Length: 89
Image (cartoon, rainbow, N blue to C red; front, side, top):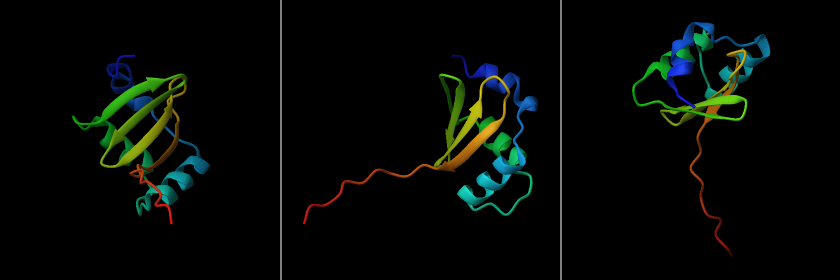
C-alpha cells in the first residue's frame, strides 16, 4: 500500500485518552500533545511507512507507531528494541 495515503490524511490522525497515556508511558514523553509528536515523526523523509492488514506502521528514530488504517487512530507507539541473542550458560 502506498505510504502517500497516510501522509495525505495526516490531519485525520488522532488517539484516545488511553492511547495518549500509553504512548507517553511507552516513549517516556513529557509532552501532552502526543498526536503532534507522532505526526512530526511520520512527516520526516526517512520515516519507513508501511501497511499490514488493518494498520499502518511508521518506523523512525528507533520507535514504531501503529495507526489504524480506517480511523487514523494511533493505537500505540513504542521503542524498537534490537533483538539480542541469549547466551547459553
